[in-house]
Length: 529
Image (cartoon, rainbow, N blue to C red; front, side, top):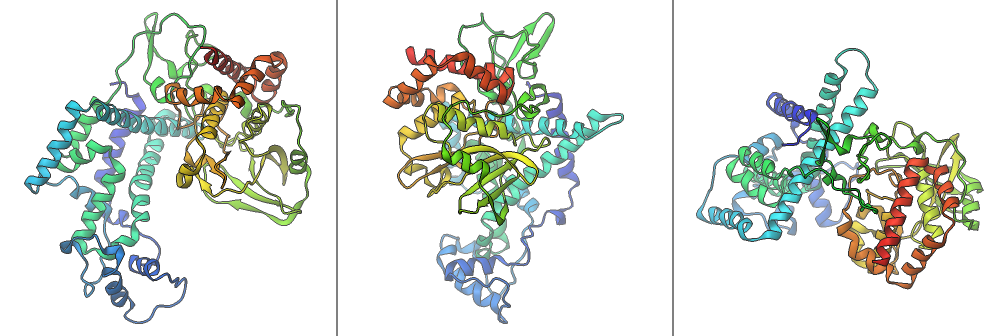
């Protein structure tokens, strides 16, 4: 296995935490509101807020909810008796129940065997399950390594590596609980109004397996226990490839999750490509994967103070207005959610925008990348990034992006987006090295166009949603064949390369600017093939 030293430690830490946890510490607490109240409010479309409830409300509400559509699919043996007080469900108990026993019936055994046997003849399913298993492990390892780096920065004294590993292990354990236990149960919290204690435990187990495991691992975890999950994960580990071939003239952008496991032989050492510094690297045929927070590849743009000059030579009036427009009194409000600290800012004329201040401690708050993404979009006349400028607000320098109307993001309205604009976005993302494009990072208009947002991780090789070029190759090819795509390629071919490179360097520094030019060269060559 190619698991790092730190990641091996994390498994031990998590197991020890699981054994020592007090069951009471894991009881679900969602404030003072009952799932029965939530279910009743949704079913009857009322909102009690802070109002006092009438005597006997629990039983009355329960009888209405249990007979309603929310509880319609609940089996009779699991359905709640409203004369019995609703009990709190301990997720640890429910999680343990997922591994109890083998098969409860012949039909369950048949379902398991059918699913397992399908892996023998279904190549696509095998590939899908293997990829999901690798991605899951990769994400855990990357998060742990990132937390180690962050912890070491705040520590001094002896045994710093060991102490940082323990802190990172604790943070990973908390994250697993939060992401895979608490949040899924929170989303389905009102469903507990339908169940008795046995049903609630069963429902919790069902919810955990739905969120926690890839498709085949769900069945193996429930039926056969932890050793099957471990075996499944070990078999999903990618094998080490052979040493790199002769450097090609053009390098296809590598997928981070794949490059993590690549090793090369140099002298008597076996070096992980993911941990080599670009400027010192003897490997010239692979662009470094630049993993997440990893300090080995800290981007120069995080520390640069050079002035940001427009590279498109096309300064729109809206840009000037965003830079200099007076802010409305009490027009700054903190935006909740998201990785970075952001604020909704309203100007005196009613224009609204999102302000993301520079924060050295926040690896995702690169305002220079936000502004440059808009400049590149404007330079190529793609028109998918909302106007974004550098601005200082309350003595904090950052990016200020105009707020655009939309009907929703890619999570909720992806089907409304035109395929041609999604192709355009894939083309754009390759140029700016966007490894964090997910459905929440683009908004969709009522006409099917999109607004691409959240570009704080671009140009620097960071992000958790990297795509291999093969995944977007067809999409980019379609865009290049359009009139708009052909014009964008022509502009890249005929631009003043020295001037464009100098502009990129002001924003990013020479290393990331050079990598951007390499990606542009790759696209130009790809368009000719």
